[in-house]
Image 1: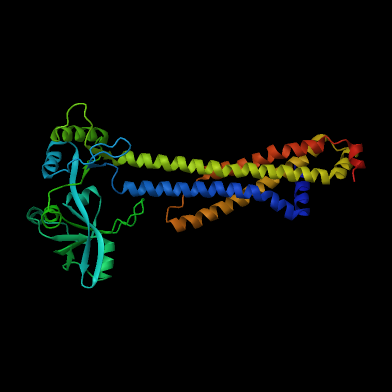
Image 2: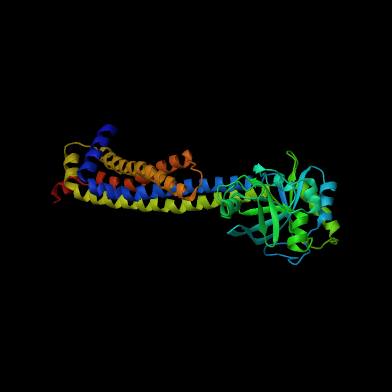
Length: 401
């Protein structure tokens, strides 16, 4: 009986091809929207997580002041070199501590110039940021102690100032300071926030303080923990140590903030996952609209085929057979719409992901759910028209014109 109902459903769909396509369109749009948005959301989540993970899941960073709705100490004093020495000597499980002071300046080489970020730091920066050199070397210990103007530049700065030529050994002007290029960083590209990570020049912290900043302020401290170290405990130890060094009394708010990159990664991943789910839920509403469209068209079909239904009932067809015929027709329309929607959704997601430069991550579960939901929509919204057809009075149906 099911095979016969399926044949009749396919015949009815072929007879009214345009109307059948328009009926499926709501399901196609709904399924395509769900799959495209969820796939794009998954790719975005993966990219954000990967970008943050590049900084290391065992990384903490410290800044003066507190930020957010309860911000305090926005004018808090910066850190200094003694704070760095204390963090390195008094904390257990620390792999590297990198001080960073930075400023935006124009760098010049020949006729080329670019405004970029100048960061004063030391060799621990390469460890905490997990940043390798494409060529050249890191700072010599003597350069760090003496404050010699030596520079390691990012790929964007190299491309602007030197094109494809080798920058090593060349001197660039950083503000009013002549600086020898000793290294080139491996390109990292854009961060998840859209900033160019390669648009940077690194120089020894003491050289930055003496020749550019004119002070000894340190605005950011990166702390990298060894693998296996509990970063939550390390964060507590850092807060305790800095409270002592900054003479913060019991009960007073910290005038600095310590952030655990692992927590930030988890928070960002959770947030993007929630947003992806919300977008998928909003897109799923169009599936309900498509289901209503199927019900309307099936009711019209029942009205158009009233005489046919009456003849079938008069010659011995059972109500269940008529019910099955129209129900199968509605489900077939939904399944075809679901299949086309899956293909369209994956295609749209692929185009969008290429444009956004995020990973193409297909979730088989959401495909199965969307396809199954489209079938369920066909059953639910096809039942009323099918039931109406099955309960027609054969005599009244035969009189229908």
